[in-house]
Structures are given as structure tokens and as C-alpha cells.
Image (spheres, rainbow, N blue to C red):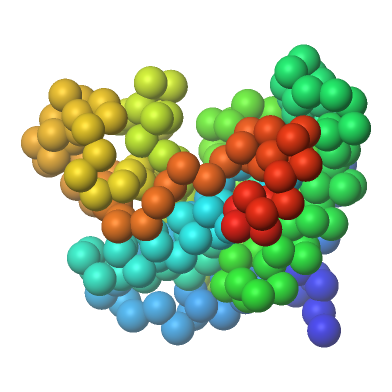
Length: 250
């Protein structure tokens, strides 16, 4: 089977797409399946790539279900087709101090361990793929910089293949509203997911519906599913040797 990206000519990718201080991206970003889906995407639909970044220390079922819920919601309610879903594990420079500050070092997983766990988790979710660009870069990269970079990368790849460039959509929980991601950065999309009926950040949520200038870039996703699973909860369960809770979350 072809490796991700091996059907793309990377020799002429400009610095704005890969960054001069980053290592070779040839096999770090999945492109093959996404390009095939873009080719098949109807012309009257906007091709979209969902992307999430995070520590994934460890990955859990809600990380994956968020992608599936959002894909179904967008395709059912908008003239768009999700052609790819990407998970991007954060760099060790960010994850290690974050985890070891509050937990024993045994609960810290380096990038290689987190990458392996994500690969195992994705075996039952073939539509979702892992991008190694962020975790394998020579330094920590901020969330928005990662998304901008991947968006530029796919625009270049699609230009090479004479395909329409997809809209890169950041997928986050509604708690990320406090991180000033709305309105979304120029040229990017934003998908906010929350549990239906949630009152969290309720005063700010309705305002999003009135921003018509962002209606093709902002997707407000509501779900009946419980969204309280977290890597923090898994680590706490591990500290307490709570095997039942661990089985429910992972």
C-alpha cells in the first residue's frame, strides 16, 4: 500500500507550506485518501477537512466520535462534504510539562507512544487519519499555526493535482470559545461541538448564529451524546486504579 503523500511532488513546496525549520514532510501528512475523495466530491459541495490537535495523552473514544458526529452534522445540514478528518498530536515540548506538572511521571507518554496509541485507535475508524507533522517538528507549534500550515500544505498539494482546495476546519469543543477562535482565523473554518441543551457559555453561543458573514465557515454542532470523557478523567482513573471507568472511556 502506498505511503501517505508519496504520490505528491514535494520538491517544490514553498516555505509558506512547510516552514524552512521543519523536517521533510513527505510521509508525515496523509494525502492519498483525501485527494481521492476530493476528486469524487460533487462540484456543488465544498470539500472540507476536519482537524483537531491535542496532547492525546491518552487518546479516548470521544476524540474519535467528535469527528464522526461533526462529519454527519455538516453533510446533513450544509452544502459540503467532509473529505478528510485529521488528528494531530502535540509536540513533547508542550505535552510533557502539562502532564508531569499534575501527575506522576508514569502517566506521561512521549510522542512515539501517543502516536502508536492513536494508530491503534484508528484501526476501527478508517476515515480518520493521523498527521505527524506537529509531533515530529523540531519545536512546539501553536494550534492555530498548525492549522494554518496544514491548510497551506493541502492548498499546494491540490494545486499540484489541479483540484479544488478544501476548507480546513478546526474542530473544537465549545469551551474553546474562550480561546478567541471566533471569528475563525482568515481562510479557515471552525466547527464548535456541544451537548444539546448545554447552558455552558450560553450567552455567547446564540451570537454565533447572527454572524452571517461567517455562515459558510462556522459550523455549530449539537449532539445528544455525552461529551464529558477526557484524558484528564482517564489519568485520574488510572491513579485510582479504576479499571471499570478506564474501560468505559478508552
